[in-house]
Image 1 (cartoon, rainbow over the protein chains, first blue to last red):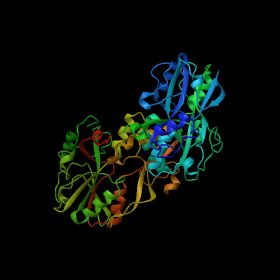
Image 2 (cartoon, each protein chain N blue to C red; image 1 turned 30 degrees about the vertical axis):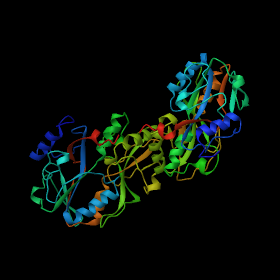
Image 3 (spheres, chains in turn blue, orange; image 1 turned 90 degrees about the vertical axis):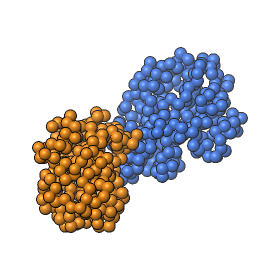
Image 4 (cartoon, chains in turn orange, red; image 1 turned 180 degrees about the vertical axis):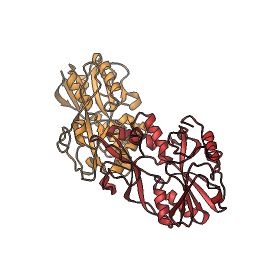
Length: 261
Length: 261
């Protein structure tokens, strides 16, 4: 298993229980997705939340009817077994982490696959930019902001952002590159002064790890896929399943296929 | 004469001597150009300078052979009479301002029409952005930077930039909008700390007027069409003609036709 492993082979290893780790860096060039699974009577509000907040919650695919375990446009997937690690939430509280949700599956569950920053980071790296969390080998720093998402039913909350530092010219280039990928968070939503979006201390991320920010660099902020998780915690559905952080659904879709231009 | 005047009618009025003013705001939607006219034995170095520095010197059109007074792709133009005000330079020194260069015309002159920020400002305004120099009714502030242009023969010098302040989200939008218009300076070349590109005091522009920069705004910098004028002053050709600042060549080309996407 490495960057050259096909998504199909990687999912088969995951399905067999032979791979349970972080998927970052595996099956390079292919789209990895955030996962949210909800009962049908919560799904339409969550779908509206995604549609109203496409930058933090870019919907790449969803199951066609409740109980479906397949996601045909994203590959030959059994969603019960093909993600290396899942988190189960009951009444909005995280209760357990598992490598297989076959035993938990229900006929009313609806699957949402949301775009992930790995796709645009690959495009930034391919352009020669230094993606700090990658070059420093840590998780990207993420922050709660004061930017309110548009609520939908019980789903609501402030946007969570990820941050990558760049010199100004590279920040401008990053805007250009990421604009091509609206379904994986798209262009940054802020750059410069963190205080303007409610971040008090850039060195104290709410999730992930701090990274070096040089004097001649700007912090550049992207809407982050942790946002739907915050909305999920606010909504407190009786039952929900997500991927474990960094343990993504690896699809057959190529990152380049998400480019709008 | 107003924003609805066609470029043809405006040029006819200029040709007759009935219009000698600033062209800003006239013939809305149509490309206005910076003008540089040089003797043929200086033209190829200047052309190389433009090609090596496309952001400050975006070539929109040039005459097909020395002595030609027409620029067919840009409209039915007689370059000797169709610009409201010209500046004449001898040995790199500004010597006179005239409304007609028929008497100065020579068989060896080559005409260069370079893109101008009016085109992208129109696109920014159309998107609802506040272009500060427009809303404050002043000339855009311009600054000499420490960014060296790639020299070509005697043409050389540091890039001049124009500055427009925006909140971060609008700055990101401005990058997206201007990226579509590479032939009118394209995306900004810098944003944030002016000191990083050698600007000591943002309130003391080297050309144009200062504009208000709020605490929650970033200064955003574009490569500027004054740069070729600086290169001209450095090269000191024995004879050269440019437009007078703000008195542009108004063409039949629509701004939208310059969009690459």
